[in-house]
Amino acid sequence: MAVSTEQQILIEQRVTNEAKSIGASYLLWFFVGYLGGHRFYLGRKGSAIAMMLLSIFGVILSVVGIGFILLIVVGVWALVDAFLIPGMVAEQKNKVRNDLLQQAMLSAN
Figure (cartoon, rainbow, N blue to C red):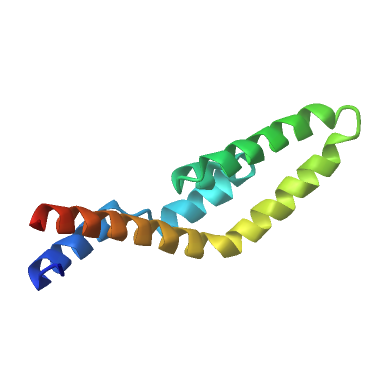
């Protein structure tokens, strides 16, 4: 069963309110991107933890000289993320929208 136009408008309002912000994502990327802060914000906890651990081990192991490789990897990853953030935000918005649509369809039945 399809949702009504009124429900669709309410869903889009909630998506706008509940979805993550591109601006906030870029601020987190700029200030704590090497620790995966933007990924935590966007709900990608697994890759955020991996990024954080690579950064921490990179700093610790840089005393020995090996850690610089890890820090370069994290730097490249963070640079690539700068281009992926809009897609990650759009994906998160679609997830919120789909969840709300499912709730609306279940409550209509």
